[in-house]
Length: 255
Ligand code: 8X3
Image 1 (cartoon, rainbow, N blue to C red):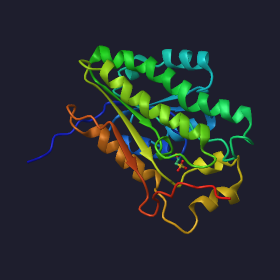
Image 2 (cartoon, rainbow, N blue to C red):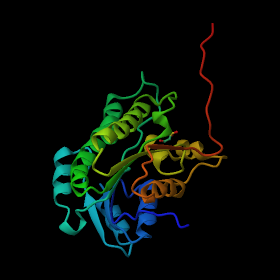
Image 3 (cartoon, rainbow, N blue to C red):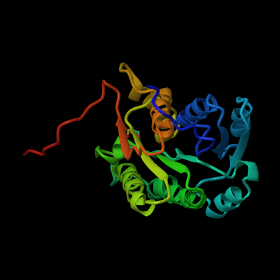
């Protein structure tokens, strides 16, 4: 028996010029889907857009700018408006300092980048999905939303928000046929750590040294699997770790 699959026709990927984003774009371009590729760097975005033979609409805006987001989303041309897969991938971590040492700017920016912007974009896209009774929102969460770690504070919290937001939308979407999934990657070798450590290459490389981290392609495969299951199947959340990563003990302070 051949297992039935769903083929997304029009895929919007936020943060498409980053490590995961590019891998997602390649994975879905292979199926012939139209791509809306979001980024905030025009040069990088245009360079990425010409890599594919499928129709591509480059969507340029800063996710932290509300009006810029609304204007850019409203300007999506008609032939790209029937988005049936939104991959909320933009975001990231800023710093790994203890909460008492982190800057207010980094803390607030992480909330804006990972949560406020994700809610905004989801709200702008999901109304059309519910009207068409066709669509899937895939959020890129993190194991950080499930497993707290030192220096993770706000990053762990924003990803916990993404998980709960993903789950809590599901009852609202009953009767609309719209699916929601939270994919929760563990350590994956991408520019994530370089951004977290503000360009400190040595610190970023040390995160992935002498082990076997996930790759962007591993996560693209997970996203692709969840997105191409038949429409009656909803993956609520999917946590993915490298085999060489697992859980640490709780820490105990002793005198
Ligand atoms: C990235 C995974 O383990 O660095 O979301 O927080 S981790």
